[in-house]
Image (tube, rainbow, N blue to C red; front, side):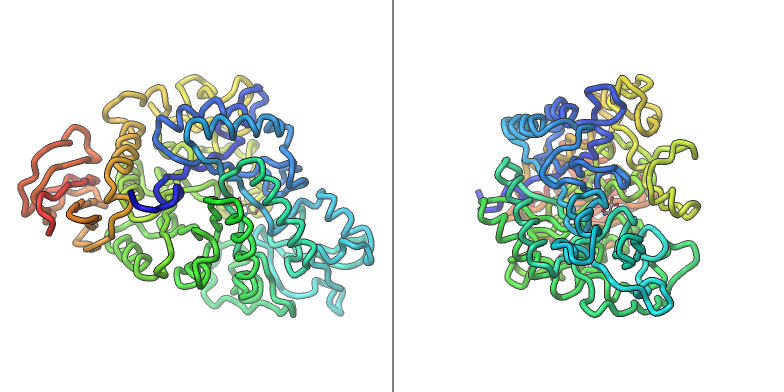
Length: 529
Ligand code: NOJ
């Protein structure tokens, strides 16, 4: 056995709690629902769940507007429910990660209500307050990621406060030592309750320019993009001082033993990898979202895979993400056939994979009628396609009208789709669910897939190939990233898994074979070179 940590060997599964399982029939998923489905997750073969925010919140941004960092929103249950979830998960060998949202609170958080109450309130400096510009307008040109100015004028004191997202999500001032102490207590509160780590929301945004300088215009801005893309985020993201904060969060987690700190960071790779910290003392893993945004073809994916592997500092452990609650679902982005290829890619690459709930049954983006739109990203910037409801529709457990998700009216419509549910796919050889279970089992049984080096990463036409090697063990992976058959040079060996069912165990003679369109394979080479 090597000395890898659990989060290096394991696979993470993101649960969007509103949409996973509703036990009390109010149409919104809850903690008791997640607990009831832990067996499913264990049997699927994942090792950890990351639960998007479950704290008390006005839910303007569905929990990413936190009104109390140390409690559970009634809609999701109670602290007792949370404790039961953690105990049960641990009994099953599953780790539990929480979503930590330190960049901003809700405007209904008592900290902000104090802060806004007067200019000399002790919590005034906990948020970012500035005088109006000489013309009475916002203090500078910074734009919100949800559209319009990032500054909101507050009538109580006549100053503006900064909000990178909604006006209901004021940004905390991380240059203030009391904010840091308060947030450190929050981490400890949950660590003491047994959580195994955190995914930290928008970690690269925590610190803003101390001089509040205007952001420069973005010469590459294209019409139709979100508003804030008009500017380069020179003074509002990735400021050097952020790394001190990351280091101190990590130090707190390390006091508790083997915990994991994951940063949500959307940055180009050279900047992204700096979040591992110069001495491996930053985040354990800055999320790597490249597979979400990449053009889906063999040349691009091979380039991304090899460049990332080379860019990683020596101490850094890689990771890969295929989907989340902020991006279109993989089955909709690249189609259901390529989604199988993408699953094979995700689970055979070097680094910790993160799966998004429902992708294991090939859920597609839902269609949301205009009168059922929930996401503020859509409601506040209509028409530019930023809405995130389609990838947040309820998990489809069975073929009944509410998909086994809820006995009430689901908060978002069921996406549906023929056979896209757990009951239908369970035990069916050709189903996505069976394929995911096989992939996860393969990753668990083949040490080379977890610990092995990444070698010979190449693309030829539409086929992307690479090898995972550990000692004399050599696994060869070939992925046809297009619909037409394609030849591939392959080693002699045994087929361990194919996206096309039923060929496992087949002898591969080499030196070449024909991959079917949209086919991916894993071969154990019989010779080490
Ligand atoms: C990133 C989260 O993933 C997203 O859902 C949220 O709207 C913003 N951060 C603001 O917290």
